[in-house]
Structure formats: C-alpha cells, structure tokens
Length: 264
Image (cartoon, rainbow, N blue to C red; front, side):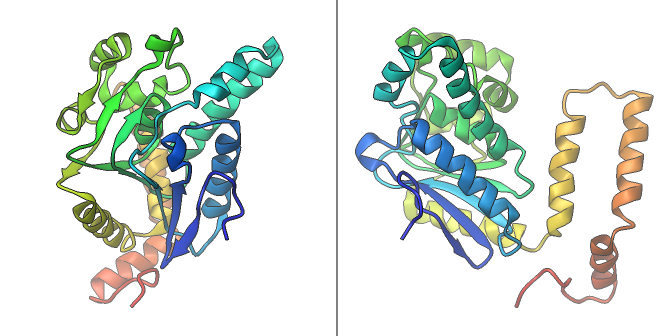
C-alpha cells in the first residue's frame, strides 16, 4: 500500500516510479500532492537501489495543473501563508529539476499549467501523439510563475511568450517541435516501450557520472564561453576522472567487460 494519499510509488529493478494518483481530478496538484511529491522524490533520490525516476500518471490525463478548489482556498490565505504555499510548489519543481538521478516524464493525455511545468522540469519527456498541452494560468487571472524557469529553459523565451500569453492548447507534435518533449509515440504501449528503452540506456551509465553531468549542464547552460567557464569545465573533468567510478568505467571498457554498476 502506498504511504501517500495522492501518489502511488514503487521501485522496480532500479527504477523509482511516481504515478500521480488523482485520476478523478485529472491528477491536478494540491498542497497535499506537492508535499507528498517532495517527500517521494527525497526518498527515491537517497535510495541507493534507485538509479532512474519516472513520473507518470493514472487515468486519462497526465495532470490538469493546479486543483481549482485548492487555488480558491489559497486565495483566502494571509500573505505569509500564500507565500509559503507558493514556495512549496517552486520547491517541488526544483527537486525534480535538480534531482541527482535522471527523471523521466511519461506523458499521456492532457497536461495543463503546472503539469507542463513538471514535464519541463524533468530531464527527459516522452508523450503519446494524442497528448495535449496548455499553459492556462492567464485564463484564470494568474501567472505561470513557479513553472516559468523550467518552461522557458525547455521551450525558449520566444515560444513561451506565445503560449504563456495566449493560453492556447497545443498538440504533442507542437510540444516536440518546441522541445518540451523529446519523443512522441503512437499509444501507451509504445510509450512504455520507449520509456523502457530509455531506462535500459540510463542503467548502463555510471550513476555518479550522471549526477555530475546534471550539475554540469546546470552550471554551463546559458553562460558565455569565458576563461572562467573553460577553467571550471577543466577542473570538473579532472576531478571526476580521478574518481573510483571513472576508473572502474574506463578499466571495464578497456577490458571489454561490463562495469560494476551494470547488472546481469
């Protein structure tokens, strides 16, 4: 039985799976879901048996974004409570984006508002052809503030201007063109196959190296090619290639054997 009210979690052969578990509410987020997601991510990130994390959903929708009943309730909070609530959502997205392990979004059905933010915060996203997306906040008189760093990083400022301002729906093929998702497939069976192929590739890689790689991307992205940046990247590789994991990986390659982190 899941220890959570709005999530279902499991670990299967090195993969930590977090399915959103509110299909009757189209997997919309509320304060309980956000707290549970932060906790689940923390548990899976610190579990040495988990090498990859998949965020998925149950039911017809990936996520309809913020639960409107929750949003109405938040509107009645005082300033401090309102800010504390907003910080929790931003922290959940940060935990996804900065998780030391690769995080994959398995997207089927509708993904609106905060659901798009979750997808953008993940390292890799694959969706079915019939998935639909929208940044709907301005229709409700609010703004996509907490999700904006992740969405803009995924699709760029120019595309964000259109879709954040119009709140129009866009298709999976458009999400692929924008860079929100990396791949689109015909149906959920093909989706599971594609996710499985990704997981197989990721499990062949050094876990510490993937964590270092995620940190590297965050440190280098959008920075100019300066002497400072060149020196920083040189120091990173010099440090990493002296680690036991790197030594094992290179020795395994030269010996034409599997490295120690790859199971049978």
